[in-house]
Image (cartoon, rainbow, N blue to C red; front, side, top):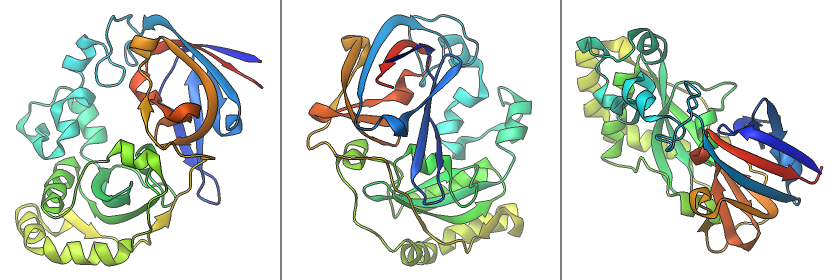
Length: 280
């Protein structure tokens, strides 16, 4: 038995050479290699303390998956334009943290399609070795980068054009229940590009030809360490239950799947102080 204690963060994600998602859960100053625990029993207890993931201040309530209220109101990474990039207001001179905006918003972004149970459009800043951690966080089994754009504002404008024809949200319950059917993302990409051609022309007219670069990268398939999917999803709420124990049956997105059709979104509890006991 091994005991881990400390404030947790969202699970770190990557893929192995076979594109199987790999998970590591930060707990205090240690990391639990979660894939190795599939089939084993976990015991988790919430110690009633939350520390902001940014300033480390103790807080009674977590906002925006781990921030205290003060950081929620002052940090650029917690501003509304992070959720709605088409509202980026850096060029208006009103960014909460201009240096952060320059580093994170005034750089290339990718518009992508991902199969998370149904196909959705989204944006990400990084596609390392053909895979974005955002795809893994959303539990995508297929994904393809559609285009590279020059900044976050442009990515939001392009995403809005696509949203007229395809969803931009993941249904987390659908994502967790099964392995979705394969979709020809290349064909869908070409079809959607035809449908949004007029919108893209308007964006290029306003921001220049350098604003959008359609990519030719192939679609990828991603696998997840799941031995059994839940039939009925029952969400664990640490604020009410203060802990849980059970056999870990799978990991997908930022969710742990346990026996009894129970699931828990670990990212939601970033900053919570937990005691986690594993068999190894």
